[in-house]
Length: 162
Image 1 (tube, rainbow, N blue to C red):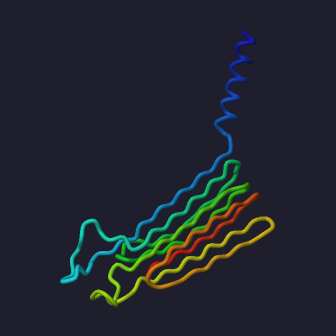
Image 2: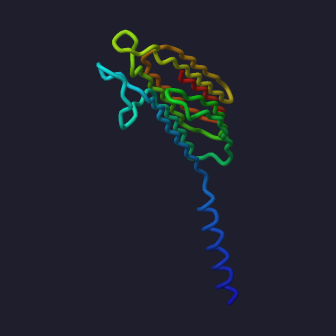
Image 3: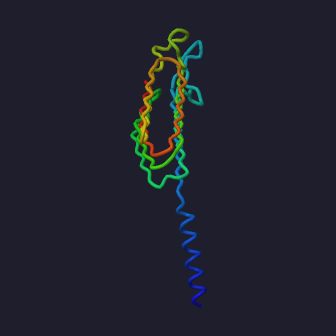
């Protein structure tokens, strides 16, 4: 009986250690859409709605034991998006950030009144280094950032569309 109890406790300990193995995965996908589109003759509200921007953030850490993530978003208006996000991981990781933006109704070729404005700020802090990427523009943009960290990682992202 004593061997059975010890065996069961050992099994529970092994199962507990396996299920508590470190791992972290984050994936954030955003699509910013508009409403009215100039079709060459008149304004229409197409279905599906036109996508004017996409934002993607992916972070993977196979060994992280502690993490923190928070974000503040503003959504709900056509053509607009706002994001502030902060991430902390205590071990090696890979982080990918991508922003793609276009103008659906360019003022030079349609009855549109404005270009799409965008801004991306991506800051990464490790134990021994820091990187900062700041991009802003009007019209069309495609930005990708890949960061590989061999130790802890702090990442701050700021996204603004219109």
